[in-house]
Image (cartoon, rainbow, N blue to C red; front, side, top):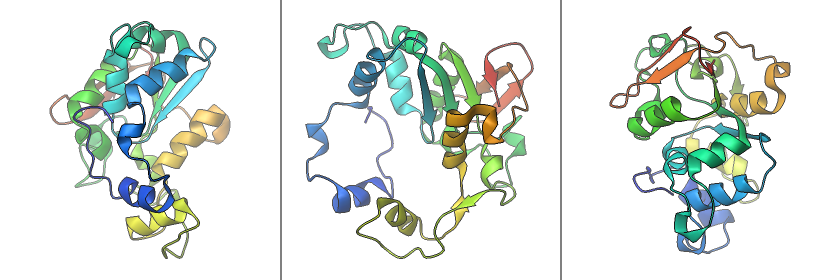
Length: 219
């Protein structure tokens, strides 16, 4: 986990305690080192990344220097530029946070990660970004919901246990829609409403706005 990243997830510690290997976080490489190694091993222009939460890890990757921790690789921005075809972010409401439901603006993932991380990624990511707005998954309307009817705890399914930790099902399927679009593009049934414009995120508040000024940010 990058420095400054929120660590109070209601899911991760509980899921790790039930389904994990028993090894602590220190046994694993940090997210920046892992991203750099995995991306560098892929063919150029072949990777689609889906971000369904905060932006700390992506921001750390983007800002990583050449030879990070002695890995002998280029800067994070250069690796991203060479290897990543598209970044799909499940964050924001579109065309602006004014489209979020009352009490949900600015959108949670942009505002709390912290906002400066999201703002920097959106501004400086060298390739295409497609945003899947949370309004598609249930804000302000319950458009697409997911989850078992029974939110009972489970020791055999980490997915059901995660829904149990959430405390109520079904819930809006924001992240799942992002993954669906990343895999199937417009064949997913999710249409591009704003194509090749510009997107900005306020680095203090996380408020977002898209404009049709030509760029490589779509929603």
